[in-house]
Image (cartoon, rainbow, N blue to C red; front, side, top):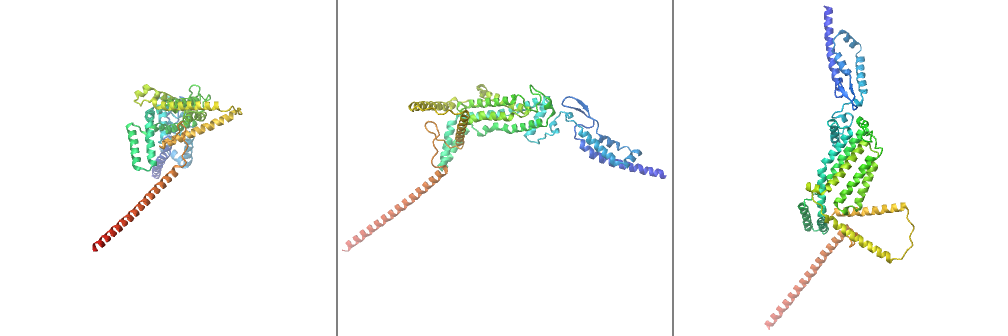
Length: 489
């Protein structure tokens, strides 16, 4: 009796203890390993193609073992519970530390598993397409980067075409736009609200008739944030590095996480960028090539990019080279007359660019002839000391800086709708003696003086009229009195 009762009470206590501990242990341990990609003996495949079986988690075995309701297990659990729990935790974390990054399978979310998580911004969009090209398309990482770059440029092809179309319409109507902007600026300086409103309405109506929408000219800037996000993602992949980038090779590149040893990719990107700028400037007209600001962009930006890209990882250099080559092809495609007709783009007006070119050519010829005449008339002077190479370079830099500054100033004045006065030979005229603020103050003072003069004139006229009326009244009164005296006599 006593033995049976004691045995039943022991079994009940053993079951309650086992159920409570097993449920608590399963809820606390299993949640820590449930999200891990290698659990419970699943088959994993590394990037190199090796297959490896992971052993089942020790936490799962420990939780299952606690459901055994034998007396021996209960005794061992009762005597050393802390030792069993600590052994299980140590076994679990030792399994996590032994995990190799190469055994993580390629799947959607692979880069996030490696730690490249960029949230929900544009960087995550770039990461999304790179992963899908690699996992679903079966492309290597370098090909996925190239494919994503081409996809991005193709998606932005339509906005780029619209920007070029708007630029062509503005160039074809440049003379009328300059005249209307000058009218708006002149009426604004005159402080005449009625004329200013009429000039602005005329400009808006002209832009509407010619379908010129300024905001479309800024569409190509959309690729700037995408380019930064692409740089961010690919640079993160190379710095981690993603195992595939270090193992893959393409052409002379044996490791995509280091820079190109022959500098071919940065040179390709810089040369393609230069040719693209040159072709775009030639499409806009010959006058756009020789401007100092255009030369600064055409030569300065590719050279600067070459210096920066020279030490980037090869994967990042591959992206820049692909994007630059696509931009070069896009520039030649848009400049093609057949493609412009196919895309229903505004044709370029050759006279819009030839007029400025011919005018500059004539001015240049006149200046050259004038310089020859002055040289013939001037006395022969002894040649001065020959300048060194460094002095010539410094003088050229100073001259280029002065030309660029003047050109940018003219462009800013044109954008602010203020006409730049020029001399007959095309050179900029000297600035006025008074500034814009002083001129407005002088105009206001002159207006007040005119009002004061008019008021004084009116006062003098009024006084003269009053005096004249008084004189007439006196003469009339005198005539009346004389007539009255004559009647009395």
